[in-house]
Length: 238
Image (cartoon, rainbow, N blue to C red; front, side, top):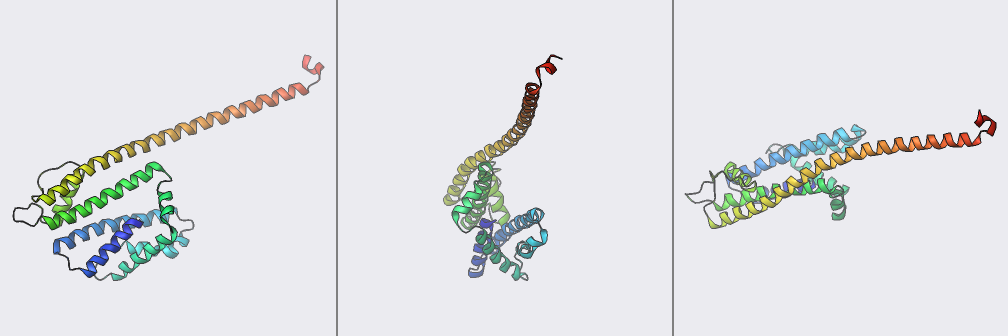
């Protein structure tokens, strides 16, 4: 959420200071919409986990407001994004805290890192190829074309309906393919490890149950032996 908040603030600054081409603005708006969906889901998750909920809503309404898309007549939502990132930075005051929290669970931390890097590659590759492919023979002309090409390339699918014609565009495509192979290989391994961890946790739970029962049985036998040792010899013979 912190990385996404930084991204939307950078985009907001660029849109304010630079006059962007129409297709570039449409591309950034599409990505902004996806980020808003992530913000909204984060708000729902935080609200469900909060105890008490009203305590979270004291400041959580800012998170909800920041999930509103950057429409021209909703400028207060953009201000809410600035407040949101300040709140996140207050909760994680140093890079060390962020890294420690991210990799508290190695598998989940790797999953989050891969997802973030993949998203960044898709967004910036789309921006770059949209700026480079401006020739008459180009098949990447719109924001949708650029996003589609980046997604198809990073997943190494490569439908071929949209492809770069310039040398720089092909270099970006080559980098994206190589990065995609590495990232999705890591992603697949991480998802598999998450399932293995769940199975291991269930097995550990069953083993703990068996060990507790064995301990209880051992204690019961010890009490019976001590009780027999305390009985007089005559009672024992009977």
